[in-house]
Image (cartoon, rainbow, N blue to C red; front, side, top):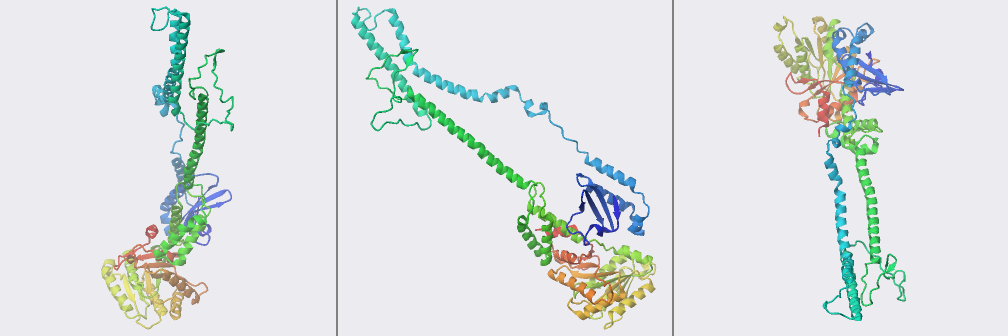
Length: 615
């Protein structure tokens, strides 16, 4: 751990605007956190190769404990004097480091699931057998079909087997069983019965083949005939097949053969194989289609999961919408363009996070940058500075400047009331000797504030008083006399009111630079209204330039902070706060939110950014 009072060394160019609080050098990574109130920076260094999830928690805990433990010492002394001296924080740091390491180990490592704990082990064996028995059911159906076909085709042999016992019995076949026939008649009758029996069997087999023919799928290859009308002998060979080497009885010429009984089965086999080939082709096509579908799904998930590096083309449309949104919220156009450009430079080449879109990534980076802009490096703490001036027995001087009609005198009275509530006495210097009624306005405010804090409540001490010399006098001289009067009378704070002037009015800007150079106030506050957009940038730039150009000192005094007025009239169009802070890198010290003395607030950066990003 390292504490330092010079955060500039880690923030090149002053305030870090990108929202990044880490710095990598070769094999080391540094993470730091700024404390603008006490001007401290807390740094944690570790090897870049290590993935430490508790670094942010550690640096937050160290920051909180160190600030709370040494708050009094830092307020009484300076942070640098404390760090140069001796202080005991080693044991506290080791304890916080040990707690952070233990908090990261709370999550137990995942163990592999055993087979006994799986869902498959809980299934009974019977359910597994039933799920696997679906295919045998289909086979049983196919076997029933084949058995039916066999029964139809075997009718002829059955009739022949029935006739065989009749022949073996030696009894004459026919209606005249009791008559004796001659041998010639018996042979003739037996021949006729034989022919009839075999003819019926072949007809039945032909019918069964006809009934099976419509069930065949796919196209059959047509029979090819020669041009001369004579077919191939091998194809048209319908000779009776042999059984066990003995030729079967040839059918007579008057019996017609039905195609499909012999070679037709071969065509059916070819049809099945072709259908199988088609099914195989479909099956082979299905994995590719499935693969393409899965590839599309994984491609979509890949686009969501963080494996894509952002490019300018990816962010261009989102940044255009963000720029238009900022301009609509009263951010100056040039500053809106510069903000979007800085976000694009920061995110270009960055790998997106898990399940994050381009819009959410750009929006988050822009929010972080806006919060950093509204929290500048130097924080103005008036109460601490006033107490420091009291120790040196001198008044704390604040000068107010700005254009006409922004509410300098009204907000000066609000700040006077805030200082009175904190127990400090205030002297108001009426240095606006140009505007009619300016002195009378401050006199009325002084009378009202004196009624709220009368001397009787403060031991007879006058808490607020007006120092004025009328109109047409030199404002720088009046301010000098007011500061001397406050030193002699023991006032804690001198608030110097100046005349409103346009940033292009050279004589009045020269007079303002003279007043600041001669009296060297502790704090120069620019008062600007929240209603302006691009005009706020022009006012601040030209005021700072005029103070630098017309100052007689070698190191001219510029604006130290901003008072943003009429904040209650703009709803969520809070872009002027961004414009003013961005162009000067100076903090917004006070925000005016109404017409009463209590309507004075400090700026909440996160609330302002939330209102700015609100659709």
